[in-house]
Image: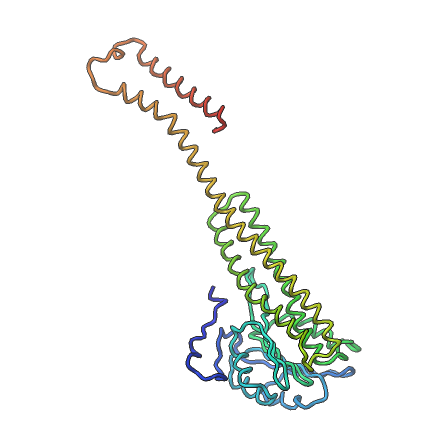
Length: 352
């Protein structure tokens, strides 16, 4: 649970626009990678200082600045001031617990979404902030490693159609890569659900219950991360933003469709996991009932035998059967007959 919860109490009482990092520090040092390209030329470099990004503000090219690590408020503030970002935008970039959303300002569009990946069979949720301006796209992620490798390959490919479509298409491609990766995560979760179903049918144990609760919790936070994205894509698609061209609007419809599919899949998995919890409880209850049934049968058989043993175990001097030559074998015969009769009766009833 702590992996999905961010403490925001340290911002209490501070005025809006105060730059305070909220979240878990996932990157030791902030890294900035600049990709600047035209239909015929591409330049890539790692910016060691934030000032190295400033000249790209006014270049007539398409520039993608990818910032890895958002814990350094000074770097975010200086980069934001250069590119004209509102203090509230910089505040949202630093607060990694934001809900997916889109905000339009005079000169840029600010988009927040969640980048989800599987690491060591666990769901890792990371905030991705995208700023779309005139001729540039700035993306902010919490740590190294993302889902944009195919985008980088398409940009570096000589003669790629990708380079001709502008910065709005680049912003679309980043969102599309994030949404498409949701399917990979859901495939992994689907396999885990199938594996747990087999365990439930076989021999469920407390470990299986813990796995069900863990998976149910992950699906809840997945839904929380993905559900608002439908509204975000719909707002961009239907909006009148001048930063997204008509050609790109067509591609956004595809992202919207994929988002709906992801949401439907998550809802289906949530219902399945909830049903698995009921199956587990029913399975454990049925197994306990079987145990109690066996114990009850044994008790039912031995109660009359105990009565016979107790009756002839009394220490009275004058008991008619004590001096009888066949008393002991007769007691055993009675015990065997009683036991056999009860076993035959239980078997005919289908209790054995």
